[in-house]
Structure formats: C-alpha cells, structure tokens
Length: 376
Length: 183
Image (cartoon, each protein chain N blue to C red):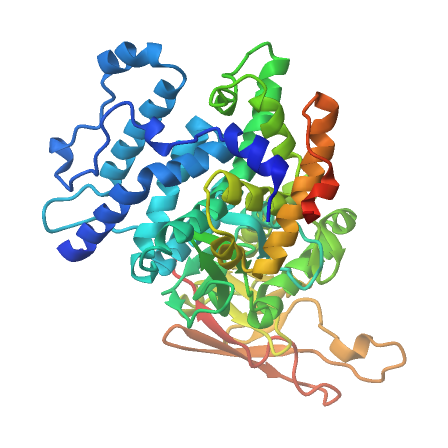
C-alpha cells in the first residue's frame, strides 16, 4: 500500500534522518568508574571547533551531557552501583514529600493524569493540593510505616504503605497517634499513577475531630461555617485553612493549659492530688483536673462553662461550693442532689467517687473517670 | 546502594551503546534537542530498572521507543508548566531561549510539513512518525501501540488523506486521493 503524502513529503522531512548525525563528537558508553575518575565535562574547545557544522552541535553537546548524566547515575566503584528506585523506594520518596506537605514535590512524582485521592476522598472533586495544605495547617503528621509491594496489576506495581497520624494537635494534648490508615499507591516507571490516602477515621473522629468541632462551636461559632462544609467535612479555601491553623493552635493551648478557677477552700489539697490529671468521661469527653495548692480547676473543652467549684474538707471530701444539681436542674424534676466526691490516688491514677445524697442520679459526670497524672 | 552484578551492568552498557542514538533521535523528532536529552536520559533510567523485562532484539528498540513515548508524555506537562513560566517572564520583558526543535528542521519547507504532522491527532501522529521517521514495520507499530495491523493501516491511510488536505493550500502538489485505491 502506498501512502504518497507520507512517503513523498513526510518521510524526507524527518528532522533526524540519520541518528548518526547526532554523533559529531565521540560518544561512548560510560564506563562505571569512581566519581572522582569520571570526566563529565563538555570539551568547550571541541564544541567551538564544531560550531560551523550546523545546528547539530547543540544536540551533540546535549548528548555529551546525557552521557555525563548517565555516568553520574551509575557512579560507583567496581563492585557497587547506585541502582535506581524500586517501586517501594519510589513510594517512600513520594510519601516523604507528602508527609513534608511538599505540594510541588508530590506533583513532580505524579504521572500525567495521575489519580490522587486525598484524606477526605469520600467527597468528590476535592483538590489534593488544597488537602495537603489543609493537613499541614491543621497540625497533621503522617508517620509512614514499611511499604509493601503487592502483585502487579495491569496498571502498574501496587505498593501499600500503612501509616499513623497525629492531627488537630493530638500529639501535643496526649492523644494518638491514630493507626489503621494505608496509602495505596500504584507506581509505574518511577512515577505515581494512583495515590489513595486511605485514611481511617474511626478512632480519630471520636477522639479529635468532633471534640475539636464542639470546641469551635462553643468558642468560635462565627468561624464554623468558614471552616466546615458540614460537620463531617472541612472547608479548604485559603481563608478556611488560615482559620484551621489558628484555631488548632488555640485548642491545643486551651486543652494543655486550662484556665484555672480560683476556689474558696477550707484546706490545701493533699500533696497526693497536686498536679494536673487527665481522663476521659464515659461519654468520650476529655477532662482535665488541676490541683495546685488551694486551687482546683476542671476543664472540659467540649463542655464550655463547666466549672466544678469545690472545697476540700478536713476529712478530704471534695465539696462543691455551688451545689451541682445535676438532673435536678431539669424543669419539673423533684430531684435534688448535693454532690460530694471522695478521692483516691493509686500511683499515677486518680479516681473520684461521688457521694450521692439523692438517688435520682446515681452517678455524676466526673465519677468513675480514671485520671492519669500528667508529667509536671 | 545495591550491589549490581557485572553481567547486568554489561548488558545495560550494550543496550545503551546500541540504542542511545536511535532513542535520542526519537526524542529529538518529537520534542527537540535540549528536552530530548532529558527524555532520553529518563528513558534509559527506566530501561535500567526494567532491564530484566527488556525483550530480546529485534523487539528491544520498539520497547525502548515505547518507554520514551511515555516519558515524553510525562515531560509534556512540565513543558506546559515551563511555557507558563516563559509567558510570565515575557510579560516582565525577559526573553527565554528559542525552542530548540525549531533548529533541527534543516530544509526550507520542511517546517510546514512537520507542522502539518503535528496537527494530526496524537495517536495518528505517533503512528505516522514511527512509520515515516523511525521506519518501523507496520506489524511492529501495531504491537507497540496495542492495535491490530489493519487498524494501523487505516490510521496511516486516514493521516495520509488529512496531510494531503492540510498541505495542498501550501502549494504542495499531491496526487489525487483516488489513486490511493490503486488502478
């Protein structure tokens, strides 16, 4: 079959009709040598001399540079060669950039038309670049474990990389890290063609996401709409990301240094109680109790305004200065409660036990929480 | 650092020695000199990684072309990004170097033909280039592109007609397309 236009016009217009034209200077396979023995320079004099040969000189120089680049790549001694990245090494390099929130670095390792599913991947049309910026602003840390190469698929080599995360300042307030997440990557030709962050929300949601959200609602309600699309989804505009960064830092400060409440006390706290204690209530909120001399502070970030004003009696009973009426505050309730707490310390664990005067509520909020002492 | 057997090393060197210029020429034909050097380098890096998968001759070179094609495809995005940078620099009065691909077309008029080839659909363009410039048999092109031989024939035929239409207004005389069928 004849293709006249192609055969008569296109074929002779071949920009490089003979590849040997690309060889006006000597080209040789780089011998594998020590770096200090390698000569990767372009011989300037030789290039100058050959300039009159036409436009191929530039390409020839490129070839020499190419030889040098490959020689550098093969830099080694006689027995040791720097091998290029395996799929697992590519995955590690990619995730190193991801964990450093290096958007450009991540992008440089993506194949054209690569698929990238960010952490809130269940929501369509999320831009992974904004997602990476968000993760950095919201205090996330990605700690990648050992990557494993799976049997190859038709798309490329699959590599799974389990990882743990800290987020929303969890590392600073003594929570996490949260495991169960797996980066699922597909690698081909040293590039990532598919990246799925595979975030496991199960433990993180109850421990960090919703407590932080409750705190935002209570303390920065005007910012809620700017920071969230809805309760389960962050907003990732520049303005939103700035708010996330600001409020996560404030939340950490609030939880780790709760505002102290000065209470009238009859006696100083026993030495065993001195310090700061933290525990989690049955309903999941984090509670911090501080005993400092004659001061007691109770901090529950998710329940703003909760204050236990207490005195310590001579016999060591914590007696709320303002009666905590509990269920008795419910309209129509006939209950009345005047809660008091006894306490016990075993090692670094504090337990508050409620002394109940009324049976309407058998246990108060603080009762039964196992508080652990924070390092001073 | 990994220890590499001398045998493997030698095999790569032979591959490199035998096919460097052809692969480099393939890249130059598509993206020009300076970018072609990078693309060619990357092609051989990929070949090194896949050394154990490389087919024996005569399939080796088409296989390397296939790698280069993919590498160039990836390069295209960074080139587009660079294009945006060039535009930004131009707006600031800074000029950048001319596209080296313009330098390698030597004969007057060839640029029009090359430009016409570049107007083809990407897959048709690649097939035409493999056929006319890499001078590959159509069976090999079919294997490379994952298509049947008849599909390749059809694509070349269609590209031939399209090129005729593009080039005729530029004064290139082409035989009547009816001749394609043979008489």
